[in-house]
Image (cartoon, rainbow, N blue to C red):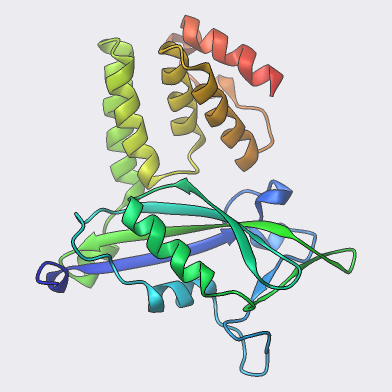
Amino acid sequence: MKTIKILFICMLATLFVTAQNVPPFALEEVEVVPPKFTSQKISLANGEESIKTFIAQNFVYPEGNRLQEGTEVVQFTINTNGKLSNFKVVNSVSLAIDKEIISILENTDHMWIPGKNNGIPVNMEKEIAVQVKVGYSKSNANDRDFTSIARGYFTKGATKLFVHQKAKKALNQFEEAMRYRPYDQGILLMLALCEMELGHTESATAYVDRIKEIDENEVKSDLLTESIRNTDAYKELEQLLATR
């Protein structure tokens, strides 16, 4: 604990329904009735508490682990009986944080009102994104700009890929960028491009599927530079995008 005492962990959490292909942070646009977190064992008498607050109050940074930050994304299913199952880590900050977040979520069994479709309770997949920010004070942690940090890694990745033609090293930089901004379509597209360049079609397909899961609209190729769209890897990736 000697290291943890001088650090502050700042956590932000958001939820969105992946089964409905809604963008993150847009829960209010879901037309079906999503599962609702109550913080109580199926009792609304004491009011509602956000899952964000519940996680923040129960999160303990794992001891004996190198301090890491980023955006942890976990998918799970809320069943009609209010129990959670099928946990899947979509974006990992670290294995220790994976276990901590899933452990907290497992303790919320029966704290959810199941989602409904046309008034009928149904199992529904949900996804939670938790930002874990590390700093030497509360204000220092809050000032950590994940967008700016991800942009720095993205720039390094682009340089490695297009200037030095080092797809593997570029992949490492884009993976770091995704640790901070897992919903950024540009980062996911560059990851798919690197994997395609390395001949890893299966991995590239997984990133393409993730892009489609986040946003069912077509990838906007007009936002990409001419140099990117003219690469053989992107042409192959474009064919892959067309089949998904």
